[in-house]
Image (cartoon, rainbow, N blue to C red; front, top):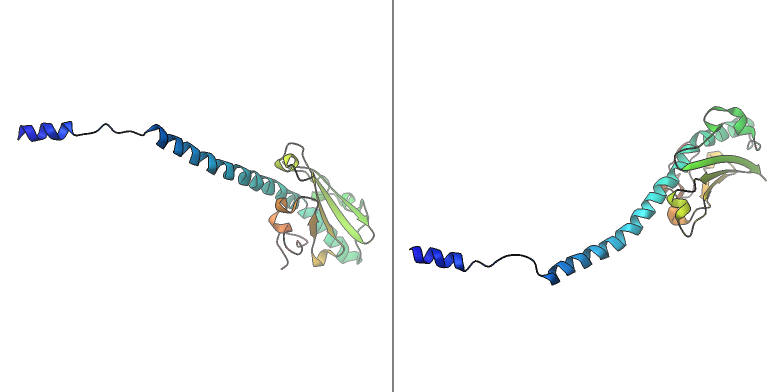
Length: 167
């Protein structure tokens, strides 16, 4: 009986990975990383771009209120005079947001800071334009590359006070 136990111990092979197995694992990790990193950068840019809608929610509400009271879009500078949340809309990624009125269309221009993923994207500028001629029908977003637009900007229009689609 002792002889069989010794033979069983001698037949054990030393375990481990071969060099080729390790190289295959490294190659697989490299392929996965080459797919994941750009997707993460797009996700980060979209998340930062969505701050533009959040920061301008108060401004859009003020514009909608003025439109419902007066029956027309407020003039350039009228929203900043109201004070409150619209006085200095800035955030962690948003540098500035301003309102301008031109030819029956109100436009909120959101400028992002230079150190954001939006500014570092090769095919996008640094501004988001949120426009409307009637806040009760919604807002339309443009300016950024379509893949970087926040989810609230991807539908037909963005509602006056929130970040949801009208559709």
